[in-house]
Length: 228
Image 1 (spheres, rainbow, N blue to C red):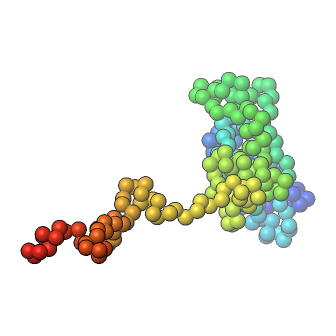
Image 2 (cartoon, one colour):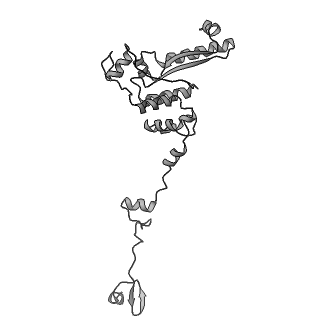
Image 3 (cartoon, rainbow, N blue to C red):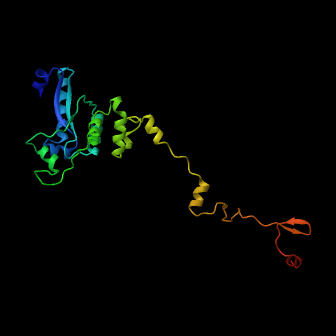
């Protein structure tokens, strides 16, 4: 590593982790992402020792057999966490004589004969590719749509862990609901609306009767009042 960093790099070293989700890397026949993380750590340690400013340029692939939209989101999160912004992303294209091509056409892993998810629609392939370049302003709307599709709206916002800020359309279609009306909610729940703290229904009106030209709400008969 020391010799590589000191004598054989002119500022940038291209590497091909291709993905960060291990079950996708298994389908690619690549080592797990932990190996790449160790390589990165060692590379930057050696670069710092010799006093050079050198960088790794990752080569990444989207829509490989076995990669779902959720896996593409995880890759985008990984890139943000490690401050990687790939300028180029390779969308998977089947080539003859490879296990990946076999999986693409058959939907089966030839090593295990187990079913493999294969993204084939132009829409999903577009979303997966766009997620890897989430940081580009022209991709914001597409990234938002991809995150909604992946049920990862927690990554839309202004927080440090979010991939993209909400645009006008997202704000317009995701307005906060008005505060619930307690009176209406109590009626929906089957509770009487006019109860006081003692449980008496104060909303029921007492009838008013005429007692010799005097209006009163005393509904007792005159006989009952006479012998009280």
